[in-house]
Image 1: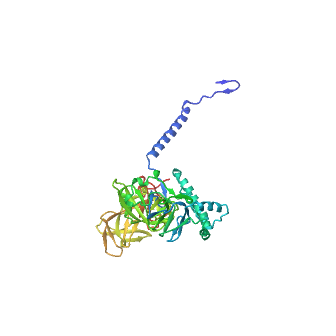
Image 2: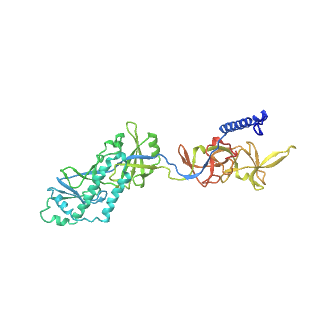
Image 3: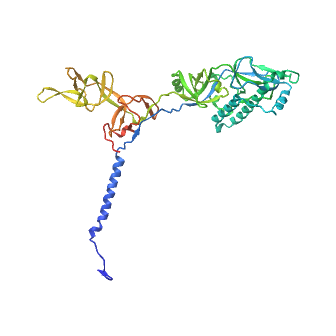
Length: 463
Protein backbone atom coordinates (compact mmCIF):
# COMPACT_ATOMS: atom_id res chain seq x y z
CA UNK A 1 0.00 0.00 0.00
CA UNK A 2 1.31 3.47 -0.82
CA UNK A 3 0.34 7.01 -0.01
CA UNK A 4 1.49 10.25 -1.64
CA UNK A 5 4.15 10.37 -4.28
CA UNK A 6 5.79 6.96 -4.23
CA UNK A 7 5.53 6.60 -0.45
CA UNK A 8 5.55 2.96 0.70
CA UNK A 9 4.70 1.17 3.91
CA UNK A 10 6.59 -2.12 4.23
CA UNK A 11 5.13 -4.88 6.36
CA UNK A 12 7.79 -7.19 7.90
CA UNK A 13 7.11 -10.82 8.69
CA UNK A 14 5.64 -11.35 12.21
CA UNK A 15 8.43 -13.73 13.22
CA UNK A 16 11.16 -11.11 12.83
CA UNK A 17 9.37 -8.85 15.34
CA UNK A 18 9.92 -11.43 18.08
CA UNK A 19 13.67 -11.92 17.52
CA UNK A 20 14.56 -8.86 19.62
CA UNK A 21 12.38 -10.09 22.48
CA UNK A 22 14.01 -13.50 22.29
CA UNK A 23 17.55 -12.04 22.35
CA UNK A 24 16.68 -9.85 25.34
CA UNK A 25 15.21 -12.85 27.17
CA UNK A 26 18.36 -14.90 26.56
CA UNK A 27 20.57 -12.09 27.84
CA UNK A 28 18.39 -11.75 30.93
CA UNK A 29 18.54 -15.49 31.62
CA UNK A 30 22.34 -15.43 31.21
CA UNK A 31 22.67 -12.55 33.68
CA UNK A 32 20.45 -14.30 36.22
CA UNK A 33 22.47 -17.51 35.94
CA UNK A 34 25.75 -15.55 36.30
CA UNK A 35 24.46 -13.74 39.38
CA UNK A 36 23.26 -17.03 40.89
CA UNK A 37 26.63 -18.70 40.25
CA UNK A 38 28.50 -15.74 41.71
CA UNK A 39 26.41 -15.75 44.87
CA UNK A 40 26.87 -19.48 45.37
CA UNK A 41 30.53 -19.69 44.36
CA UNK A 42 33.52 -19.40 46.70
CA UNK A 43 35.00 -15.93 46.87
CA UNK A 44 38.71 -16.19 47.50
CA UNK A 45 40.23 -12.98 48.84
CA UNK A 46 43.97 -12.44 48.97
CA UNK A 47 45.92 -10.74 51.76
CA UNK A 48 49.35 -9.15 51.37
CA UNK A 49 51.76 -10.16 54.13
CA UNK A 50 53.41 -7.17 55.81
CA UNK A 51 55.70 -6.58 58.73
CA UNK A 52 54.10 -5.38 61.92
CA UNK A 53 53.43 -5.87 65.60
CA UNK A 54 50.31 -6.48 67.64
CA UNK A 55 48.68 -3.49 69.28
CA UNK A 56 47.19 -4.98 72.44
CA UNK A 57 45.02 -2.91 74.74
CA UNK A 58 47.58 -2.59 77.53
CA UNK A 59 47.10 1.07 78.47
CA UNK A 60 46.24 1.79 82.09
CA UNK A 61 45.80 4.84 84.33
CA UNK A 62 47.84 4.27 87.48
CA UNK A 63 48.47 6.02 90.78
CA UNK A 64 52.03 6.75 91.89
CA UNK A 65 53.20 5.53 95.29
CA UNK A 66 56.38 7.07 96.67
CA UNK A 67 58.22 7.58 99.97
CA UNK A 68 57.01 11.12 100.61
CA UNK A 69 57.43 13.28 103.67
CA UNK A 70 55.56 16.55 104.24
CA UNK A 71 57.73 19.15 105.97
CA UNK A 72 55.79 21.64 108.16
CA UNK A 73 56.83 25.17 108.96
CA UNK A 74 58.09 25.70 112.51
CA UNK A 75 57.40 29.44 112.40
CA UNK A 76 54.66 31.73 111.10
CA UNK A 77 55.22 34.28 108.37
CA UNK A 78 55.57 34.71 104.63
CA UNK A 79 57.27 31.76 102.94
CA UNK A 80 59.59 32.12 99.94
CA UNK A 81 61.16 29.21 98.10
CA UNK A 82 64.72 28.95 96.78
CA UNK A 83 65.14 25.25 95.93
CA UNK A 84 64.08 24.17 92.45
CA UNK A 85 61.09 21.81 92.40
CA UNK A 86 61.96 18.37 91.13
CA UNK A 87 65.64 18.77 92.00
CA UNK A 88 67.52 16.92 94.70
CA UNK A 89 68.66 18.82 97.77
CA UNK A 90 71.32 17.66 100.19
CA UNK A 91 71.32 18.06 103.92
CA UNK A 92 72.02 21.72 104.72
CA UNK A 93 70.84 23.13 101.35
CA UNK A 94 68.55 26.14 101.65
CA UNK A 95 64.97 25.27 100.71
CA UNK A 96 62.85 28.22 101.90
CA UNK A 97 62.78 31.27 104.11
CA UNK A 98 60.07 32.59 106.41
CA UNK A 99 59.71 36.34 106.96
CA UNK A 100 57.81 36.98 110.19
CA UNK A 101 57.48 40.72 109.53
CA UNK A 102 56.48 40.63 105.88
CA UNK A 103 59.23 43.09 104.97
CA UNK A 104 60.86 40.67 102.55
CA UNK A 105 57.71 40.79 100.42
CA UNK A 106 58.08 44.56 100.14
CA UNK A 107 61.79 44.20 99.39
CA UNK A 108 61.10 41.67 96.65
CA UNK A 109 58.42 43.96 95.24
CA UNK A 110 60.92 46.81 95.09
CA UNK A 111 63.54 44.56 93.52
CA UNK A 112 61.07 43.40 90.85
CA UNK A 113 61.09 46.88 89.30
CA UNK A 114 64.59 46.12 88.08
CA UNK A 115 65.17 43.84 85.12
CA UNK A 116 65.96 40.28 86.14
CA UNK A 117 67.83 38.26 83.55
CA UNK A 118 66.94 34.56 83.47
CA UNK A 119 69.74 32.08 82.91
CA UNK A 120 69.50 29.37 80.23
CA UNK A 121 68.79 26.91 83.02
CA UNK A 122 65.90 29.07 84.27
CA UNK A 123 64.44 29.26 80.77
CA UNK A 124 64.83 25.53 80.33
CA UNK A 125 62.92 24.91 83.54
CA UNK A 126 60.03 27.13 82.42
CA UNK A 127 59.99 25.65 78.93
CA UNK A 128 59.93 22.08 80.29
CA UNK A 129 57.07 22.92 82.61
CA UNK A 130 55.02 24.42 79.77
CA UNK A 131 55.73 21.59 77.31
CA UNK A 132 54.86 18.90 79.87
CA UNK A 133 51.55 20.57 80.62
CA UNK A 134 50.75 20.97 76.91
CA UNK A 135 51.44 17.29 76.13
CA UNK A 136 49.58 15.99 79.17
CA UNK A 137 46.53 18.28 78.98
CA UNK A 138 43.12 16.63 78.57
CA UNK A 139 39.93 18.68 78.06
CA UNK A 140 38.01 16.48 80.52
CA UNK A 141 40.53 17.43 83.24
CA UNK A 142 40.33 21.20 82.88
CA UNK A 143 41.13 21.70 86.55
CA UNK A 144 44.76 21.00 85.70
CA UNK A 145 44.85 24.43 84.01
CA UNK A 146 44.49 26.10 87.40
CA UNK A 147 47.12 23.83 88.92
CA UNK A 148 49.44 24.72 86.06
CA UNK A 149 48.85 28.44 86.49
CA UNK A 150 49.61 28.30 90.22
CA UNK A 151 52.65 26.10 89.63
CA UNK A 152 53.98 28.43 86.93
CA UNK A 153 53.47 31.49 89.17
CA UNK A 154 55.38 29.73 91.90
CA UNK A 155 58.23 28.85 89.57
CA UNK A 156 58.55 32.40 88.26
CA UNK A 157 58.48 33.78 91.81
CA UNK A 158 61.06 31.23 92.91
CA UNK A 159 63.39 32.19 90.06
CA UNK A 160 62.93 35.85 90.96
CA UNK A 161 63.73 35.12 94.58
CA UNK A 162 66.86 33.28 93.48
CA UNK A 163 68.18 36.56 92.05
CA UNK A 164 67.68 38.21 95.43
CA UNK A 165 69.36 35.31 97.17
CA UNK A 166 72.60 36.07 95.33
CA UNK A 167 73.03 38.93 97.77
CA UNK A 168 71.99 36.91 100.80
CA UNK A 169 74.93 38.16 102.82
CA UNK A 170 73.80 41.71 102.23
CA UNK A 171 70.28 40.76 103.37
CA UNK A 172 71.67 39.34 106.59
CA UNK A 173 73.66 42.49 107.30
CA UNK A 174 71.79 45.17 109.21
CA UNK A 175 68.49 45.01 111.03
CA UNK A 176 66.14 45.73 108.10
CA UNK A 177 65.56 42.07 107.26
CA UNK A 178 66.69 40.48 110.50
CA UNK A 179 63.27 38.81 110.91
CA UNK A 180 64.02 36.37 108.12
CA UNK A 181 64.60 32.74 109.18
CA UNK A 182 66.40 30.40 106.82
CA UNK A 183 65.34 26.75 106.60
CA UNK A 184 67.66 24.10 105.21
CA UNK A 185 66.92 20.54 104.23
CA UNK A 186 67.33 18.16 107.13
CA UNK A 187 67.28 15.14 104.83
CA UNK A 188 68.37 14.35 101.27
CA UNK A 189 65.57 14.10 98.74
CA UNK A 190 63.61 15.57 95.85
CA UNK A 191 61.71 18.77 96.61
CA UNK A 192 58.05 19.10 95.59
CA UNK A 193 55.85 22.13 96.30
CA UNK A 194 52.42 20.48 96.44
CA UNK A 195 50.36 18.11 98.58
CA UNK A 196 47.37 15.91 97.75
CA UNK A 197 46.71 13.63 100.72
CA UNK A 198 48.23 10.56 99.05
CA UNK A 199 51.65 10.99 100.65
CA UNK A 200 51.24 7.95 102.93
CA UNK A 201 49.40 5.75 100.42
CA UNK A 202 50.51 2.11 100.33
CA UNK A 203 49.63 -0.70 97.94
CA UNK A 204 47.57 -2.45 100.63
CA UNK A 205 45.35 0.65 100.87
CA UNK A 206 44.64 0.94 97.14
CA UNK A 207 40.98 0.38 96.24
CA UNK A 208 38.55 1.35 93.48
CA UNK A 209 38.06 4.83 94.96
CA UNK A 210 41.79 5.52 94.70
CA UNK A 211 41.47 5.81 90.90
CA UNK A 212 38.40 8.09 90.94
CA UNK A 213 39.88 11.50 90.09
CA UNK A 214 36.64 13.45 90.38
CA UNK A 215 37.33 14.33 94.02
CA UNK A 216 41.10 14.51 93.70
CA UNK A 217 42.52 17.78 95.03
CA UNK A 218 46.11 18.88 94.58
CA UNK A 219 47.18 21.82 96.73
CA UNK A 220 49.99 23.97 95.33
CA UNK A 221 52.30 25.55 97.88
CA UNK A 222 52.89 29.05 96.56
CA UNK A 223 55.74 31.41 97.43
CA UNK A 224 55.10 34.74 99.16
CA UNK A 225 52.07 33.23 100.91
CA UNK A 226 51.34 33.46 104.63
CA UNK A 227 51.78 30.24 106.60
CA UNK A 228 51.19 29.40 110.23
CA UNK A 229 53.42 27.24 112.36
CA UNK A 230 52.72 23.60 111.47
CA UNK A 231 51.41 24.31 107.97
CA UNK A 232 52.96 22.28 105.12
CA UNK A 233 55.70 24.23 103.33
CA UNK A 234 57.13 21.56 101.01
CA UNK A 235 57.30 17.85 100.39
CA UNK A 236 60.43 15.71 100.28
CA UNK A 237 60.66 12.44 98.35
CA UNK A 238 63.38 10.48 100.07
CA UNK A 239 63.88 7.43 97.82
CA UNK A 240 64.45 6.85 94.13
CA UNK A 241 62.45 3.62 94.43
CA UNK A 242 58.80 4.17 93.59
CA UNK A 243 55.76 2.34 92.25
CA UNK A 244 52.64 2.65 90.13
CA UNK A 245 49.48 0.76 91.09
CA UNK A 246 47.07 -0.04 88.27
CA UNK A 247 43.61 -1.67 88.29
CA UNK A 248 43.34 -4.73 86.02
CA UNK A 249 40.39 -6.62 84.59
CA UNK A 250 40.46 -9.70 86.81
CA UNK A 251 42.50 -11.80 89.20
CA UNK A 252 43.46 -14.02 86.27
CA UNK A 253 44.85 -10.98 84.43
CA UNK A 254 46.82 -9.97 87.52
CA UNK A 255 48.33 -13.46 87.80
CA UNK A 256 49.09 -13.47 84.06
CA UNK A 257 51.05 -10.23 84.39
CA UNK A 258 52.82 -11.50 87.52
CA UNK A 259 54.20 -14.44 85.51
CA UNK A 260 56.41 -11.95 83.64
CA UNK A 261 58.09 -10.89 86.93
CA UNK A 262 59.39 -7.76 85.15
CA UNK A 263 57.45 -5.81 82.52
CA UNK A 264 58.63 -3.00 80.28
CA UNK A 265 56.47 0.09 80.84
CA UNK A 266 56.07 3.07 78.51
CA UNK A 267 55.04 6.35 80.17
CA UNK A 268 52.65 8.05 77.77
CA UNK A 269 53.46 11.50 79.15
CA UNK A 270 56.92 11.57 77.55
CA UNK A 271 57.28 8.10 75.91
CA UNK A 272 60.08 7.13 78.31
CA UNK A 273 60.42 3.42 79.09
CA UNK A 274 61.46 1.52 82.22
CA UNK A 275 61.27 -2.01 83.61
CA UNK A 276 58.93 -2.55 86.54
CA UNK A 277 58.79 -5.44 89.03
CA UNK A 278 55.30 -6.95 89.09
CA UNK A 279 53.30 -7.66 92.25
CA UNK A 280 49.60 -8.69 92.10
CA UNK A 281 46.89 -8.11 94.72
CA UNK A 282 43.14 -8.69 95.10
CA UNK A 283 41.19 -6.61 97.62
CA UNK A 284 38.31 -7.78 99.82
CA UNK A 285 35.79 -6.73 97.16
CA UNK A 286 37.41 -8.94 94.53
CA UNK A 287 39.01 -6.06 92.60
CA UNK A 288 42.41 -6.93 91.13
CA UNK A 289 45.44 -4.65 91.05
CA UNK A 290 49.07 -4.82 89.95
CA UNK A 291 51.97 -2.90 91.47
CA UNK A 292 54.87 -1.99 89.18
CA UNK A 293 58.00 -1.00 91.09
CA UNK A 294 60.86 1.01 89.55
CA UNK A 295 64.28 2.12 90.76
CA UNK A 296 64.70 5.05 88.37
CA UNK A 297 62.80 7.88 86.63
CA UNK A 298 61.13 8.96 89.88
CA UNK A 299 62.24 12.59 89.69
CA UNK A 300 60.82 12.90 86.15
CA UNK A 301 57.30 12.24 87.44
CA UNK A 302 57.65 13.48 91.02
CA UNK A 303 54.85 16.05 90.64
CA UNK A 304 52.40 13.59 89.02
CA UNK A 305 50.06 11.44 91.07
CA UNK A 306 48.17 9.85 88.18
CA UNK A 307 50.10 8.52 85.19
CA UNK A 308 48.95 6.86 81.96
CA UNK A 309 51.20 3.92 81.11
CA UNK A 310 51.39 1.20 78.48
CA UNK A 311 52.55 -2.32 79.26
CA UNK A 312 54.86 -3.55 76.51
CA UNK A 313 54.37 -7.29 76.71
CA UNK A 314 55.27 -8.20 73.11
CA UNK A 315 57.96 -5.96 71.71
CA UNK A 316 59.11 -8.21 68.88
CA UNK A 317 58.09 -7.56 65.29
CA UNK A 318 57.42 -10.07 62.55
CA UNK A 319 55.03 -10.87 59.73
CA UNK A 320 51.48 -9.85 60.61
CA UNK A 321 48.71 -12.12 59.31
CA UNK A 322 45.01 -12.48 60.22
CA UNK A 323 44.00 -15.54 62.23
CA UNK A 324 41.43 -16.42 59.55
CA UNK A 325 44.33 -17.24 57.20
CA UNK A 326 45.81 -19.90 59.50
CA UNK A 327 45.11 -23.58 58.79
CA UNK A 328 46.30 -26.83 60.39
CA UNK A 329 47.38 -29.70 58.13
CA UNK A 330 48.71 -33.24 58.66
CA UNK A 331 51.91 -34.52 57.03
CA UNK A 332 53.82 -37.78 56.79
CA UNK A 333 57.16 -37.70 58.62
CA UNK A 334 59.88 -39.58 56.73
CA UNK A 335 63.64 -39.92 57.37
CA UNK A 336 65.43 -37.40 55.19
CA UNK A 337 67.70 -40.10 53.74
CA UNK A 338 64.79 -41.47 51.70
CA UNK A 339 64.55 -38.29 49.59
CA UNK A 340 66.00 -38.59 46.11
CA UNK A 341 66.28 -36.62 42.88
CA UNK A 342 64.97 -37.66 39.48
CA UNK A 343 65.13 -35.37 36.48
CA UNK A 344 65.51 -32.30 38.65
CA UNK A 345 62.46 -33.24 40.72
CA UNK A 346 62.41 -34.16 44.41
CA UNK A 347 60.64 -37.29 45.57
CA UNK A 348 60.89 -40.77 47.05
CA UNK A 349 61.19 -44.33 45.72
CA UNK A 350 58.08 -46.36 46.52
CA UNK A 351 58.11 -50.15 46.44
CA UNK A 352 55.47 -51.61 44.10
CA UNK A 353 54.59 -55.05 42.77
CA UNK A 354 54.28 -55.74 39.07
CA UNK A 355 51.67 -57.96 37.44
CA UNK A 356 54.04 -60.93 37.48
CA UNK A 357 54.48 -60.51 41.26
CA UNK A 358 58.00 -59.15 41.10
CA UNK A 359 59.08 -56.11 43.12
CA UNK A 360 59.98 -52.78 41.57
CA UNK A 361 60.51 -49.17 42.62
CA UNK A 362 58.62 -46.20 41.24
CA UNK A 363 59.58 -42.56 41.65
CA UNK A 364 56.92 -40.46 43.40
CA UNK A 365 57.32 -36.72 43.22
CA UNK A 366 56.61 -35.05 46.57
CA UNK A 367 56.80 -31.59 48.07
CA UNK A 368 58.82 -30.96 51.24
CA UNK A 369 56.97 -28.65 53.61
CA UNK A 370 59.42 -28.73 56.52
CA UNK A 371 62.70 -30.36 57.36
CA UNK A 372 64.90 -31.06 60.39
CA UNK A 373 68.40 -32.50 60.49
CA UNK A 374 67.01 -36.04 60.25
CA UNK A 375 63.41 -35.86 59.01
CA UNK A 376 61.25 -34.28 56.33
CA UNK A 377 57.53 -33.50 56.27
CA UNK A 378 55.82 -34.69 53.07
CA UNK A 379 52.37 -34.03 51.65
CA UNK A 380 49.75 -36.73 52.14
CA UNK A 381 48.31 -36.41 48.62
CA UNK A 382 51.20 -38.30 47.02
CA UNK A 383 51.67 -41.03 49.66
CA UNK A 384 49.46 -43.35 51.70
CA UNK A 385 49.77 -44.98 55.08
CA UNK A 386 51.52 -48.32 54.63
CA UNK A 387 53.56 -47.31 51.58
CA UNK A 388 57.04 -48.85 51.69
CA UNK A 389 59.81 -46.47 50.71
CA UNK A 390 63.19 -47.68 49.51
CA UNK A 391 66.39 -45.85 50.29
CA UNK A 392 68.34 -45.37 47.08
CA UNK A 393 71.38 -47.63 46.55
CA UNK A 394 70.58 -49.59 49.73
CA UNK A 395 68.25 -52.35 50.84
CA UNK A 396 66.73 -50.22 53.60
CA UNK A 397 62.94 -49.93 53.61
CA UNK A 398 60.73 -47.53 55.56
CA UNK A 399 56.99 -47.96 56.05
CA UNK A 400 55.00 -44.72 55.93
CA UNK A 401 52.82 -44.33 59.03
CA UNK A 402 53.85 -41.53 61.34
CA UNK A 403 51.97 -38.25 60.98
CA UNK A 404 52.35 -34.83 62.53
CA UNK A 405 50.37 -31.64 62.11
CA UNK A 406 51.70 -28.20 61.23
CA UNK A 407 50.05 -24.82 61.13
CA UNK A 408 50.46 -22.64 58.10
CA UNK A 409 48.75 -20.54 55.44
CA UNK A 410 47.90 -20.93 51.77
CA UNK A 411 50.30 -18.95 49.59
CA UNK A 412 48.80 -17.86 46.26
CA UNK A 413 51.81 -16.16 44.63
CA UNK A 414 51.83 -18.78 41.83
CA UNK A 415 48.11 -18.71 41.17
CA UNK A 416 47.17 -21.74 43.26
CA UNK A 417 46.82 -22.49 47.00
CA UNK A 418 50.23 -23.66 48.17
CA UNK A 419 50.63 -24.54 51.87
CA UNK A 420 53.44 -22.71 53.71
CA UNK A 421 54.23 -23.46 57.33
CA UNK A 422 54.46 -20.66 59.92
CA UNK A 423 55.85 -20.27 63.41
CA UNK A 424 53.67 -18.00 65.56
CA UNK A 425 55.54 -15.70 67.92
CA UNK A 426 52.39 -14.37 69.60
CA UNK A 427 48.81 -13.54 68.66
CA UNK A 428 45.62 -11.90 69.85
CA UNK A 429 41.98 -12.46 68.89
CA UNK A 430 42.40 -11.07 65.36
CA UNK A 431 46.03 -11.27 64.22
CA UNK A 432 49.18 -13.32 64.68
CA UNK A 433 52.82 -12.31 64.42
CA UNK A 434 54.85 -15.04 62.71
CA UNK A 435 58.59 -15.47 62.45
CA UNK A 436 59.99 -14.07 59.19
CA UNK A 437 62.67 -15.65 57.02
CA UNK A 438 61.97 -19.29 57.91
CA UNK A 439 62.67 -22.09 55.43
CA UNK A 440 59.48 -23.27 53.69
CA UNK A 441 57.74 -20.27 55.27
CA UNK A 442 56.52 -16.81 54.36
CA UNK A 443 58.21 -13.63 53.25
CA UNK A 444 57.05 -10.05 53.36
CA UNK A 445 54.76 -9.07 50.44
CA UNK A 446 53.67 -12.67 49.84
CA UNK A 447 49.97 -13.08 49.04
CA UNK A 448 47.99 -15.56 51.10
CA UNK A 449 44.34 -16.62 51.26
CA UNK A 450 42.50 -14.43 53.77
CA UNK A 451 39.94 -17.09 54.71
CA UNK A 452 41.09 -20.72 54.52
CA UNK A 453 37.49 -21.99 54.50
CA UNK A 454 37.05 -20.61 50.97
CA UNK A 455 39.80 -22.65 49.31
CA UNK A 456 41.18 -26.18 48.99
CA UNK A 457 44.87 -26.93 48.83
CA UNK A 458 46.34 -26.71 45.30
CA UNK A 459 43.12 -25.14 44.04
CA UNK A 460 43.63 -22.70 41.19
CA UNK A 461 42.94 -19.10 42.12
CA UNK A 462 41.11 -17.02 39.52
CA UNK A 463 41.08 -13.28 40.15
